[in-house]
Length: 379
Image (tube, rainbow, N blue to C red; front, side, top):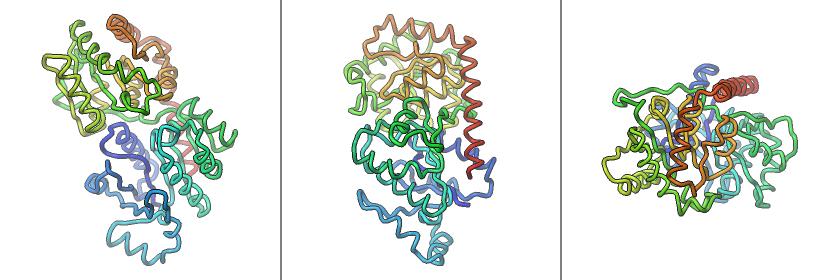
């Protein structure tokens, strides 16, 4: 059996953490399955080869999608490509586990939605499984997107919306279909690793920026004006509390640039962590006193491990996440004052082990386990 994990990469630590989460489940449930990964600018051949992944050859360029041709290639040719070059086509793949996180909706271009819709329809027509693992979906207001999805989504084996808003976006499009379900982000089951060189975590507060906060994708436009000021305020607040602020780059050059700006504006020595291993990133988050975070999976890693986490939002997925973990009061607005931010952080630290928060953490881990049981039964 060949399983493609779609939508993952090695630069965004959240996307790589989802990859690791799926690999752990594959090892447990399908140890003999063969892994397939598609190349993309953030997923180099070297990184894919280290996992022993076959390389997916996608016959697509912009709007032109010719992947249907792969089903007509002689099997002998496909076997030769796989054996000799480690290259496989869409026709060779038995199961697609789509772990895109947040890739389909108005905030993104239509090409990814069009390509995905084509894959779903071809998988269904050829008796293969296409499963959307829990992810944020929508909104879908463009007529072109709606047309593609209306024809494709009912044919998916399973669609796991990550929260109520995503579920409503899909349900509003295709109705209350049996393949549409709701499950939380599944990285909450992954155990982090604390690196040896990360010490005295109980005195450290991580600040994790996100370049999307100041991009046109952000639905909260005021953040473009206030974001850097809030992060610099956070540095000063953490120092005033007798704790050590540490910047953590959760994704590549875009976030690294913001880390550098905060470092320059905050004054004084301010370390920047650039950890490549997503399991160690989660371990660092879990070993810290608190987190001030703009990356979704950074927030999940903190909230699911019982680490106080102040969050910012650039899409609906943050609001729903903090509601689920009973911590909506820890999601801040762009206009927040330094005094209010300090109060919010102190309150989050003081109440992190409240009963309702502990219950939420346990509940969502149980739901993730149920999700995998459902996926395993389908596969």
